[in-house]
Length: 477
Image (cartoon, rainbow, N blue to C red; front, side, top):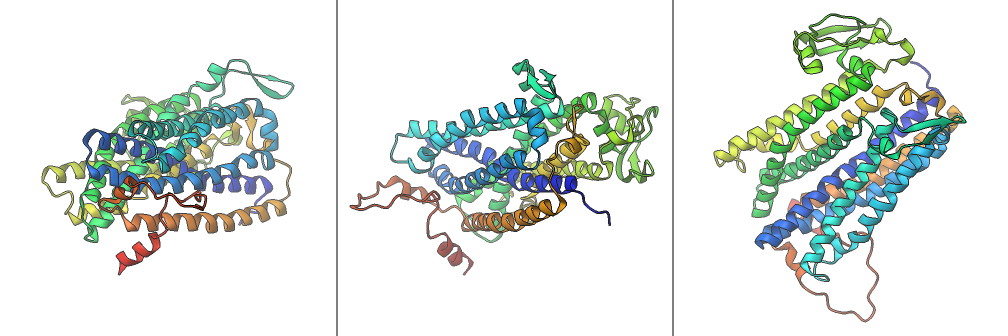
């Protein structure tokens, strides 16, 4: 077994923390948009089902928002502790972009979050809808700045290097770098899909257990409509993103497709299975579909791309990993499209709420959106290696001068702490989901609380009722 160096441990630590973190913003982005749609439907129709769903899912949103903020702060410190050379080199670009995210998105979210969670009867319906919309907008603005920073690291533009440091000379080119539009749209759609699958799985779980009410039916129905519409769009966006990556990071495309020959003539097969061997410079046990690789990669039947042998060995990403992470992402995407089409077929036959096979599939697909999202990020970030800023700074030159022992201890502490803190948070969130939306749940929010002589200040998570555990235990019995 190879010995891990300090660089390897620093990369593993950042990969672990960012993988845990990205789960919560993804759900937050999609859930904020879902809540805005639910409240808009409630204002337009006055159907209490939308109101009940809003109040139920706002609790899940509040919990995800809190865990996302906490896990995100840790990553900000890691740039300074583990990647100080990168911060010194590229801080002139990434620092302001992250600051803009705080000054715009986070302040907007924090400013209206309290009104959204606690102001149902304390402000008018129009102002409350405005607060929900502003929180939703804040999550999208946050995505914009974060993806601008990350995309610049993949396709850097609008800079000069002065005295060994990156200096911005054109902020428009920095922000709207070549890969930014594709990454932003791809990520936001992925968040919508992850949320829709989560909501749909929740509804399917309750229906399979016989807990059938209009609110549960409505959330399953809305989730399946979202998946049906958005999953095929994601496939188109992913194709455009792939063409952009082929133009700017051809080594990554060669690695994730498992192609090695530098000047292999077309047509190229699409490899469905194989084990890329970085030492032997070949993909073992390859099974492919003739010509389909050329069609997907070049949109022609005879096109070809540069293989990994066209690039120096030290500039090649690890094909053994991203070959499979890419296929996990694409395979789950195909299953999402299948789930959406199955829902449409059963809807036409009036069986979408009763077909146990379909409901089981929807339940199993619940985590698929988050798994696909993580697989996509692994493909993107590992595929950028060995560069931390593509073509400008290698990852090996970006790490802080820590020892193996220091990084081993900090990594172990992160793993233990994260599994405890966020494990408890996720367990509590699933407990809320298990309770499920209740009919007329929103009535409690329509009653003004009686004034108290000595009222205690509200807890940060007081949007979540205290009797969740009792209700969940009652449902299990």
